[in-house]
Length: 310
Length: 310
Image 1 (cartoon, each protein chain N blue to C red):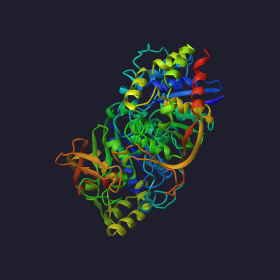
Image 2 (cartoon, chains in turn blue, brown):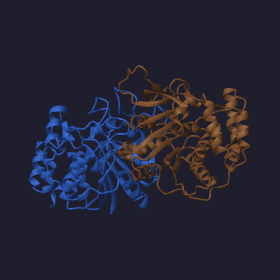
Image 3 (cartoon, each protein chain N blue to C red):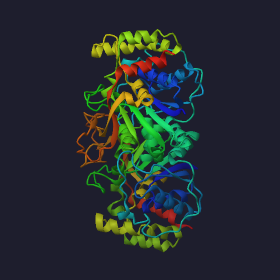
Image 4 (tube, rainbow over the protein chains, first blue to last red):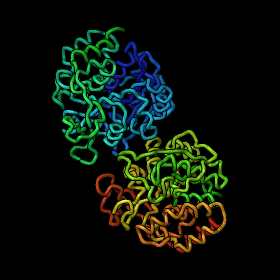
C-alpha cells in the first residue's frame, strides 16, 4: 500500500479529493490534518470527518493551525456555502476529532515511517510550514508533497495574481517552497475550462447513482454557482481533486518541470503570487516542480473510478 | 513566593550573563530554558544552556532545543564574531553531563505554559522564532502567560544588526511580528536601555574576580565580547548590558522608565527588523507594548554584582 497524509481546509472540493484517496485501492491515508482556509478549522474538521464516515473509514482527523502565520484569516463561504459544503448541512459526524495537534501528529507519523508517506496539501500551507520549522528533517523524510496551490500561468482567483491557498498564507507557502521538500505544485489553472465537470459530466456522475457520486455534486452546489457566475467557467471546477488525481496516478500530469519558484510576500497587489522562473533567467537553483499540463480525460476518469463502484 | 520564569535564549555571552543572573536570584524558579539560533548555531546554544544549569547545580531545569533558522527569511549571519563560534567566546568548554528534553522548544513552551496557567513569565532574549511557533501551535498561550519580558528591539536608538534593527528582531522579523501582535502583556527591553547601561572594564574586572564558578566562567568567555565592543564602539573593555537587563526588569521594574507605545515591526525589505514606536498613535494597527526608555544604570549594575558575586 502507498501511504498518504492529507492536509486540508475541508470544504466541498477538498471533501471530494479526500474521498478519492480514501477509496483508491492501493492507498492508505495515515491521517488528515485540518488548517484554516476555506472555513475555520472546526468546520473543516467536521467536513473532513463527514467525508471519512461516508467512505466507511476511521482515518484520524486532526486540527492544526487555526490561522495563517501573519495574515488575518479570510474564509471562502462565498464560494463553498455557509457550511463549506454547499449548504447541505450534513449531520454531525460520530467520528470524534483526534486529540493530538495536527502539526505534531504529522511530525510524529512521518518520523516513524521516514521515506514512506507522501503528502497531499489541499489548503493553505500553514500547517506544513509550522511542521517544517519545528522539524526541518521532514523535508528529507517525505518523498513527495503534492500541493494544490498557486498559478504558474499567473491566473489568480483571489486576486488577478494569486490563487487562494497561497494568497491566504503567503509566508507559509514561501517557507515550504524553500524548505527543500520535494514538491509538485499543481496550480489553479488546471481545473479550469475543459477540466471542469460540465453539465453532461455531472449528469453522468449522477447516473452512477452511488452515495459518493451524489455527494460529489451535492456538496459542491454553491461552488458550481460561484464558479459559473463569478469566474465564468462552464461547470464544476475541482482544484483539489485534480491535485489528488495526480497524487494517485502521476500519469495524469503530462508535463512537469523543476524551476526556481518564489512566493511574493511583500506586495499588496501581488500578494501570494507564485513567481515561476520558467526560462531560468535568475540562474537560481530550481526548488520545486511545476505541473504544466494534465491529461483531462485521464483526470476525470481517475475521479470517476472512485465514485462508481459502491 | 517565587516567580516561575521560562527563558528562550541563544547563549551567547550576554545570554550567559543573564541566565546566571536569573539562576542566582532566589525570586525566581526557572522552569526551563529553550534554545534558538542567533548568537551562534542552535546546536551550540542548546548545549550552552545545559552547561549553565549544570554549572549552577540546577540540573533539574529542563532544556529544549528549538529553531535553527528564521521562519520565512533565509538564515543570514549569526553572531559568531560577537560571541565566538561556540557562543562561549571560543573557549570550547567540555560537553555537558545532561541531555536535552525530547520535545522541540515550541512544543515545550506550549506544554509548560498550559501546565502552569497564569503563572509563567516568558523571557525571550534571542530571536523570537520558538515563541512565534508556540503561539501558532496553541494560540491560547497568549492568555495564559503572566507576562512577556523580552530583550530585543529599539524604539528611539537605531539598530545594531542594521542601521535600524536590533539583532534579535533582525534575525527573525516575522517571528517578532507574531510575538508583538499576540495581544499579551509585553515589555520590550531594547537597545534604548541596554546600550545606556554600560558595564565598564573596571566593573567587569572586579565582577570576574568574585571567585565563584559563575563569575569565573564569565571572566573566561568575556574577552571576545569586550574586543567586539571595542572594535565597533571603541569602548576600551566596557560592554553594553543587553540580556541581563531583561532579568533586571523582572527583579526590579522600578529601575526602568517605561512608556506604553504602539510598536510596529517591519518584516521585509531594507528596514526588516525595525521596531517602530508610534508615539502619536497614527498607525491604529500597531499593538501596544510596554517599552523601556530609560534605566538607572548604576543601580542595575549594583544589583547584578550583588547577585553574581555571592
